[in-house]
Image 1: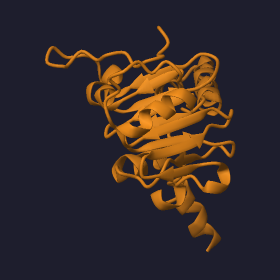
Image 2: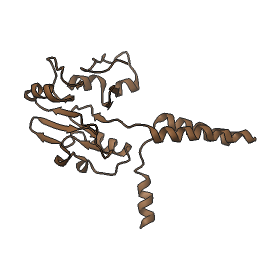
Image 3: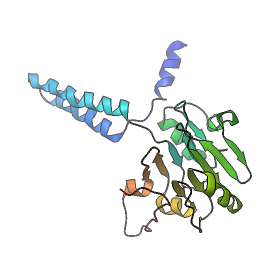
Image 4: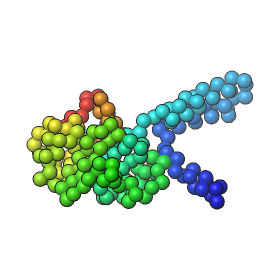
Length: 214
């Protein structure tokens, strides 16, 4: 039974960053290709790749392309969904890449952790205590623009929303795809559109309110 549990757990390992995979692969190839004593120099990139994989910082906030599926990382290091998942595929992939074996329903942020939801949206808190608001109805925009540190809206934000450090609305995710956000003194973001590159037929994305310049 213990052996089965261990083998099953191998499938729950967190995904490695690309740089770590490249370094480990190059180091392994170096060791395999060469026969002289300097072949063992291949352990240097392997070690570097392992360090990159170990120290890489996962995103603090994830927003799916539908704009309604949002996950934030809590003090326990785990992802927590703001309300029931509207995009089950993205949620399952997020948890899988995080090495998290929980089902989407078990990953919903609990009220005990300060999260709360109603018909207008949800409020949750990051590991550093920043408030993240998920707006589901236009009526909730004014209040959340005043109090939230980060705002994600399933409806267009047509009026200035200067309170939050970052605002991502429906048009942002429609143009840029899913978002990964690293919180802190300086916000860092990655989007699907940036990762796959621009195409002549791609719609030029607009910058979300509060986004830091590169």
